[in-house]
Length: 351
Image (cartoon, rainbow, N blue to C red; front, side, top):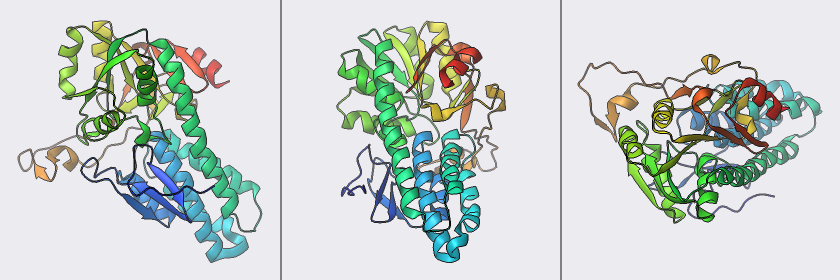
């Protein structure tokens, strides 16, 4: 069933399908402006993923699945019964839009497996049903993770989160923020400290916006303020999402997560990673094999259109880092919880 489009996107509206078109909440403008952009072609969806209109590993997987539907419509219109060959360039472009988040490639592979089973007739409705299923499954998985993660928190306590792993980064409800929502509703979390998350400021722009929208107490802090906050006591957990988890439990997440986990270990604070099993990449033995996206250094050298660094200053802008499994206390998925992850435990989870 197609979704009715609200006048103004809410945190649960990262991606919506309506009347044969894909609507994406323009996350680069939040929270100053809340609006949708509309997409009719797969290349445009790939560009939206690459340029951060939509971000968050599960959300870009959902967007890519809908992008495949648009690609199929175009391929069938242009090539008729030969649409399966004509669609390949769009599939490849979608899968390559961002390299680190494995959900993107996972969603395209799932759609492509269905494509390989179809004949030369019009595929659009069949592929749309699959994309809608991917979206609905992610939303349900997040609810399940929220409940499982909340069970681990004894509380009441304060927690820290880094970047944004909320409803706007997923099919709805959120991974890390899904755990926080469920734990807060159960009276286990008093306050959330959100790292601002340079250079895209997802914590300041998105996490704070989502939590305030949900009525959950949130305090914004600079990324470098976490150590002194932990030293003062009262922080029970660091709760984050992930863009890819290797077979041994190493976790790739937004740059700064590794340092936060090191600080947590020193201060006796537990680290929880909430992510669907579509984020787990059992083909990579360890985090050393995870490709780390590097973006334009200008994202770091400027902020809000104003240059911060001297002209000619060099900069490095890795988008993610890898947190070793030894620093992770729990990986929470919709299939279950892995405590103190190892390769053997991850294999048992993935079955």
